[in-house]
Length: 185
Ligand code: PRP
Image (cartoon, rainbow, N blue to C red; front, side, top):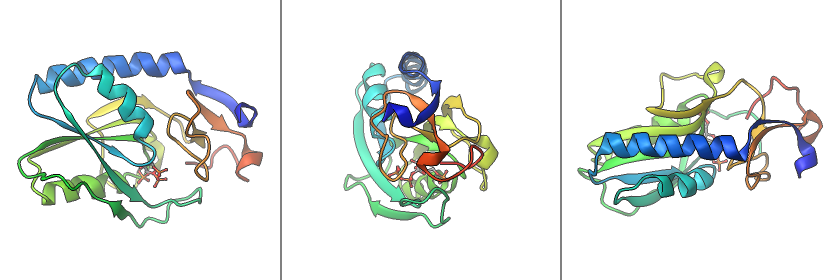
């Protein structure tokens, strides 16, 4: 699996250091208020498991599963919700976590839905922000790192559901997905 990576963009140490700092910032901003950390499946699962342990306050965790990409390298543009939280969201403060903010369609759809379901405060935190690909008007409240428009995998990010378990974030060799470096996740 490591041989499929052309170069490492963020090492395990860099990711953990950044997450520790995000955790401190989030804990300070929420200052003990009730909070639900809500990860987007599947990509956000690694991020939530590390970040939640760096936020030293009582919180709930939950999951939502949108999907627009399937096994393709390009978005279909249609965001479908496969799994929605069962918990009552009325009046709740929610911080939505995801591995990457790309076109912005997924995060926009999910944050709008959570507000429609009555959440009073919906903010967003993404590990990676690929600004060059944005199509809709969506910015995250907390960002781990900005990334160039490369096909990145690891730390939750996949190609055809593989590579999520890499502990770092790297650029996938083009022969592994049949594209050029400028193509994207
Ligand atoms: C990826 C990623 C984000 C979304 C970002 O999820 O995890 O949720 O795409 O793209 P956007 O900003 O263009 O909407 P994907 O749909 O591939 O599902 P996955 O998390 O199961 O990999």
